[in-house]
Length: 110
Image (tube, rainbow, N blue to C red; front, side, top):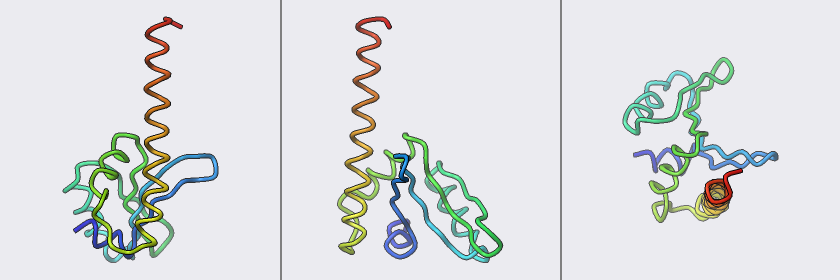
């Protein structure tokens, strides 16, 4: 079901400063749909964005990784597939970088 909303109202975003986020936007009259998505997935947060808009937002690395595994090979429209893979490859880059830094820290005890 999350895939349906993502094809139309979802976004895989990378901010200029490099932060990643996954967002589904709905009219605030439909906030119960976003709350159901959050409850079903068990992560993310629902926020009001202005007077008439609400969003389901995932920004933490664990949640973003779970989103990536959920959507990998499960999108239909070319624009969403393209945006997803830009998001996905940057997420993998960040995770690998953090893992290598952690391993270096453990090896050299910085």
